[in-house]
Image 1: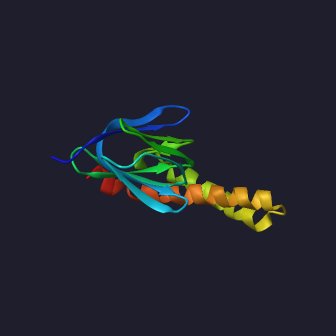
Image 2: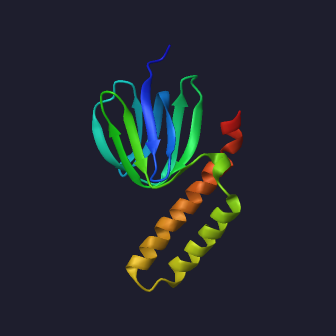
Image 3: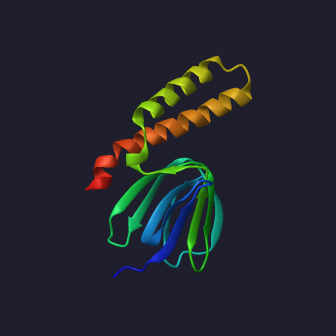
Length: 140
């Protein structure tokens, strides 16, 4: 049996996930990182991306997560993000609409601040669409 550790994902609105897992992968500014039982202690910023959770049965489950903070300690690993969604919770029409709006704002943004925010919105929408596309894999 694999070594398991307690992993939780918190958003401002709900406890998205809590359970024993074999491992996770998450996106940091320096790239993707894998966390497994016995990982060294870290606290790091997390970027919008695809969170992958390897559950206690060895199955990898994808989820969308926005920006946040990852904390790995001796007794559990916590991911605190602004938003988290399972593939089945994502509305693809809404994500596609958000993507279109962001692309339009990038093209018309007069200020760097506006363009940067539009690029972040575009990244969020595109990531949601990628996670939604993984829903068939997640349900099998």
